[in-house]
Image (cartoon, rainbow over all chains, first blue to last red; front, top):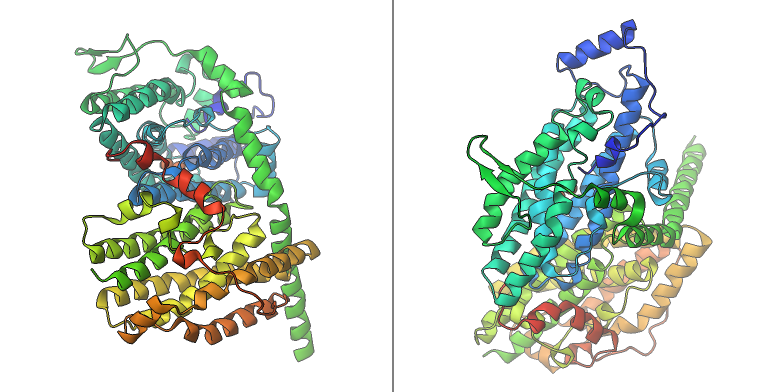
Length: 336
Length: 250
Ligand SMILES: [Fe+2]
Ligand SMILES: [Fe+2]
């Protein structure tokens, strides 16, 4: 998902194994089992804290980097209405990034540190945002598929054991359904449009389908950390379950559009009540996560450029705030 | 058709549309996340105002065009925006200075236009005034931060104000078109907005420790369709899809 990198760091030693039998640990686990929320000032295992920082910051970074592929079309949106909707949508994603950075900060790390981790390549973000948006239909496909997949993942996260993250997710989820709808609405307009528009829509689906399935992360069998995160209720539904749910919901939507899902193995199984689908190309997935997706370099270049070009502005804001404080202190001293 | 009112509405709609477009270019590239969000928000408001003014223009014209037809199917010669708003973003300093000079004008302009004898125009102005008031607070506060921040930010903010000053005169022009509408009580005399604008700008520049440039030669022409070189590039980008796929619905 937006936090798929969580699962792939094999042999990661930075997350300590704690003594499961200590009294503190047992009390912590029993609170979680009782569905109590963990709050920032509560005791928590170091592994829980680190896992959450990693997950929430990956999620935040994904929101921010995710502004780029759609932002690519804001200045070319084909009508005033579409332009306004897209501006509002991308602005929402920035807001999601803000809530999430704030949630991560409650765990004792600053936004500056987190952003530094992103810009130095230490932190990951979702593989999905390393694919390009060459046509307007890609904006529709992102809203429909990527935000659609985000909803699948984020609804269970509203029940995550960590209070600030769960509450951030509740705010985020309220906006995601609007995102999904505006994307699907773009796809409807294109698929009912001219032959050129239909072609755009089909090609966008061809390009975004598999990367969208990859968003849910490795299959459960290949997932590290998964069982601990389930026990801690940081993760509540497995990658494969979420992926299946996404396929089941999305295939009929593609049919409604008259578009073909690019998977020859896709078929309805009446017995299980689910769609069966083909094998995901995990080599591609791993390559994209490793930095070799079509847009990894460009995305990071743009983020770094914005950060570097904006340094003087952030410095000015700090310097001005400092001057104000000093002046206020002087006035206060003079008044005494 | 009321040609005077139509052209007047185009001027306002186009200025909002073009400035909104310029601000939207920042989305994802701003100095900090809060600014990405704020600039996108102002871009959204301005695009909404453009939609409303161009929509009313199309209605006044009565030829079956709508706001989109006016936005996406006119070329440079038919655009009527202020020259100030078509200038490229350059850096955040120029973007904020341009925004503040425009916002301070919008507050005065919409305040006066809200008393228009044309109820439709007055309603759009009243709604625009609420937004412009918030925009001016934002851009004014940032101009103060930049002006009274570091040496570098001060220098950049001053350079931006100096560079833009020559484009501010156009906001207060009262040509025959405006004069005709003033007579009918539809539009305010734009010359009358200058004193209050000057006061607003002087306050913020003083707080920002920035120097107000002298009123020298003022650039003019955007409102009559005489534009610089940047607008054509902006329109080429903005209008690409509707132009490349005529008749398609999106
Ligand atoms: Fe989001
Ligand atoms: Fe979203």
